[in-house]
Amino acid sequence: MTRTIVESQTKSAVLGFDEPFCVIGERINPTGRKKLAAELEAGDFSTVEKDALAQVLAGANILDVNAGVVYNSNPNPNETEPPLMKQMIELVQGLTETPLCIDSSVPEALKMGLQTAKGRPLLNSVTGEEERLEFVLPLVKKYNVPVVAISNDDTGISEDPEVRFEVAKKIVERAADFGIPAHDIVVDPLVMPIGAMATAGQQVFALVRKLRVELGVNTTCGASNVSFGLPNRHGINNAFLPMAIGAGMTSAIMNPVTLPITQKKIAEKKADCEAAGIILPDNMNDETFVNFFGLGSTKLRPGKEMEAICAANLLTNNDPHGGSWIHFNKLGGSSAEGGTRGGRRGGRRRT
Image (tube, rainbow, N blue to C red):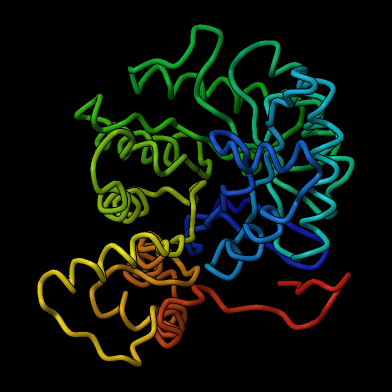
């Protein structure tokens, strides 16, 4: 059976057809996050620290590290991204023993990430574009790391799933020319938004099955792409992930964390209660209040997607004796896959 092994110095994550679904935490990424981008430009890594720890506590098996911020002071990512990648990886490695995924479209940032990361990180990514193949595949071979292969090429992203399969096949074959085995290729078949393409879900499920049977590769995706532009995206994601797992998908790049409810929303709900004549107990704290009204939590906790994944692992017999499912629920969903490791380093908790 195909097994892709991603490692830190002390901890492993395994992607495989007979393994629990692997969650690659996506939040260490400034793309679309103006506040985080501004913090990074100012040398403030406090949000990176929080996101790293929160994702591990929520059950992430691998942490994706993306340094793709465009500085106002220097808009050239070829100059700014490599040193930032080094800083971010060193920081995250000092906080957690969770294996890493080095994520960049800048070649030198990928190279810097490989030089800095300890163990055997996952490299994200290579495409079917000739220039990208010629740069990335030699790095994959040199550092003996697995790589995410995205199913687009010099012609762009095709809406035809057969074309995307052929791109994936091309990457696997070119990798073999460099002596890179298929078990070190993790194919992203590219999930299209269901709001723009009604058959997007059916397409990816069929593609995953074909990639597994014909190429023998593990697969991943940007899980939230399927719900882009639609209301109640979590509801769609919660349905999509177990269906993808059932089709044979072995990992996803996703957010495992549900963010806390804001004080503004708590105040609005309390005002609604007062207007409706609802009298609340004087000693009711905010966490009790939001739980009672089904508003979420005031604390960081695993998202509903993590609950769906844990349930799918159980139903596919990749959770022996239901241990992880029982543990998840005993903790009230506060830790999905086993909690934290003890110890301190540099004044920070390691997980």
